[in-house]
Length: 70
Image 1 (tube, one colour):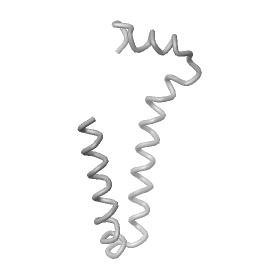
Image 2: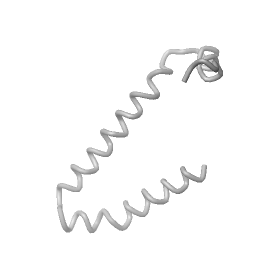
Image 3: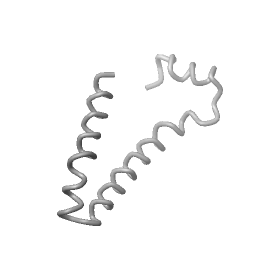
């Protein structure tokens, strides 16, 4: 929870203070950088969350409690 709080605070700080400066200095390229970050986050979600799609709660419990799975 501490890591989540830290990353949320850091992202909020960057969005609040750095984005206006970036828009003044590099203009529309700021949106390109943001789009790249969103694509990376989307890819990370696809690689992790879709493994659980369509499974029942019992199957998910087996997945997370099985000592052989990594």
